[in-house]
Amino acid sequence: MVEIDPDFIQAPEHRPKLNVIEAENIPVIDLSPILNNSIEKDPLVFDELVKKIGNACKEWGFFQVINHGAPLESRQKIESVGKKFFGQKLEEKKKVRRDIVNVMGYYETEHTKNVRDWKEVFDFTVEEPTLIPASIDPHDKEVTHWYNQWPEFPPEMRETFQEYAQHMKTLALKIMELIALSLGLPPKKFHDFFKDETSWIRLNHYPPCPNPDIVLGCGRHKDSGALTVLAQDEVSGLEVRRKSDDEWVLVKPLPNAYIINVGDVIQVWSNDAYKSVEHRVMLNTEKARLSYPFFLFPAHYTMVEPLKELTNDQNPPKYRPYNWGKFLATRKRSNFMKLDVENIQIHHFRIN
Image (tube, rainbow, N blue to C red; front, side):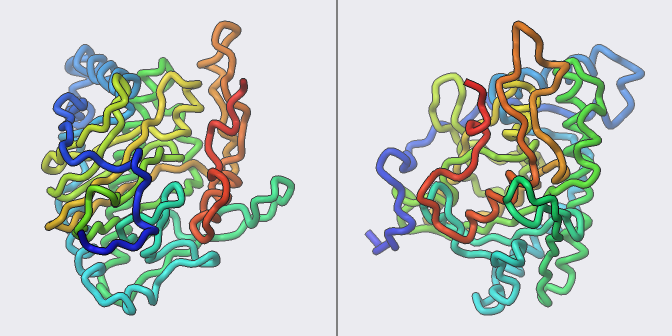
């Protein structure tokens, strides 16, 4: 066994099993009905699509989409540029290293649940700049700006990433429309929440690991935003905790598919009709892996709470309202310090 820094080592109960179960039955949903105007031609096909989305959100919290309309060329470009960036020497990447002031950029000591992840990342926001609360004090109304840090190399990185971000935003909002319809809501019910979005994209680079039995690329977690749209290369590694039996199952990459997962914000908006699901990343002894999730996040001034249309006397709200910007600022702060307590989560707002 190669000597591994203890910071990376998972507690025995959270270590990956190397004899993984492959998720053959994770839903794969064809979005072509919303791309080729077949809604007018055949409303039954569209209704079936909405039903499939609803079932996937309810039963899995995860699904893959194909024939989604996002151009393959843009995805290939971001992957190529990402490999160029991560292929540089560490001192070059550190020129755009994020810190408590510049929260976007490169980072190589990410922790999940206080255990270090075996990866390096590059983060950037979709809106430049992004408006965010200046402090986590609930009474402080001042806002500040998050700016992206772009490296000199590769020179095409900024343009490539910004173009890709717009395609992801379009796809994410299309899926949000289908989710709204599956909950019995108007299709554009969620759109206003994202007018001043705090959405961002991360490039994850997971180098080969000599001890994938005790280390994770990314520890178990749920996504705190509304929706995640994940692209990954051909190297598998993403594991999802299956709702039906709590087993960890491996999500096999499909060419040019996107993996979609429900975030905590949808869980609160839907009053637990749709729940976010734990996931993690396993490592490979020989191959590096690249993934690039788009995180759809609402505007900083959004009060996240169960939607009135989805609550009543028989199904009262299960969460107290919380301010999204303050929640996000609190979570971001934990990126730069090891916490003695659990980071802020939606269950802290649950009504008992």
